[in-house]
Amino acid sequence: MSPVDVGICVPVLNERAALGALFDDIELRLGGGRYTVCVVDDGSTDGTVEFVEERARRDPRIALLKRRKSGPGCRRGAATRAGVEWLLAHTDHAFFSDVDADGAHRPEEVAEGVALALSAGADVVIASKYVPGAVVTGRPLARRAGSRAYNLMLRALMEWRIRDYSNSFRVYRRAAAALLLRYDAIYDTPVYLIEMVAIWLSHGLRIVERPTLYVERQSGASKVIATDFLRGAAGAARVAAAYRLGRFRP
Ligand SMILES: Nc1nc2c(ncn2[C@@H]2O[C@H](COP(=O)(O)OP(=O)(O)OP(=O)(O)O)[C@@H](O)[C@H]2O)c(=O)[nH]1
Ligand SMILES: [Mg+2]
Image 1 (cartoon, rainbow, N blue to C red):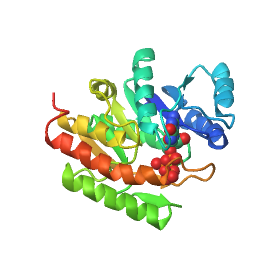
Image 2: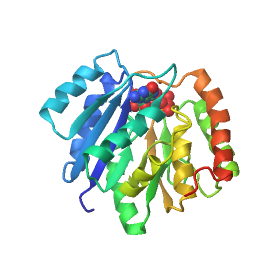
Image 3: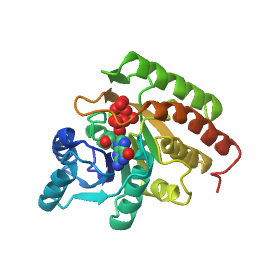
Image 4: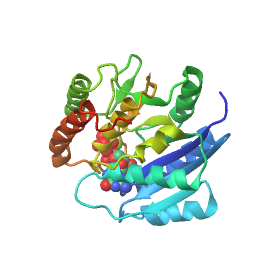
């Protein structure tokens, strides 16, 4: 596999317990190539900021973007967009990826995604929970069922061939990252992940999916609260309608 050249955006909120292992794993799996990790924090209070600052002092491949989150619940959409903006402005990486801090996304799949993008000529590679060969471990049944239903709804409303709209774990080319910034975000919540796909689809980008091994978090607490799920469904329907109406077209 050729060495990677990737900017990795890691949104974090109180992930001190998991971050050390993630940084070590990124170094182990991607250290043979070029990478920058942009950690985007929205006001952690568990020592995450101090921990990342200390790692960043020792490792120039790690950067910390400190922000304040705009409201309750999961605001990882805004964090991801800010990380992409920072990576575009401060690095020249050919590929971008979004990796959660909680251990759900394995860094070796970043390298595998880049390799697939290159061999398949794809612009976007989705680490998919819903293609043959994918494995999801440790996720409560209700979460799995909810995610399945959410993605079925999105497939019906947007494009049937895309199977996983909601996993943030993707690898995409620099041009696909730059495209995101041409549109104001409608949502700063996880619904922004759907907006990303809507933008890419609207511009005819080549999107492929590969099976992921999704490992539910082993430490720390989920940042997703009940209202995120309720608002998520309505938000996704709104983004799908905007997609159909051509809001994201060139
Ligand atoms: N900067 C920032 N990061 C966030 C915010 N909410 C969640 N995150 C991070 O986004 C990533 C995904 O959040 P999770 O709580 O794991 O949400 P999830 O993976 O959709 O759901 P779970 O299945 O419960 O893990 C983690 O790295 C979080 O720390 C936020 O408001 N701001
Ligand atoms: Mg998670």
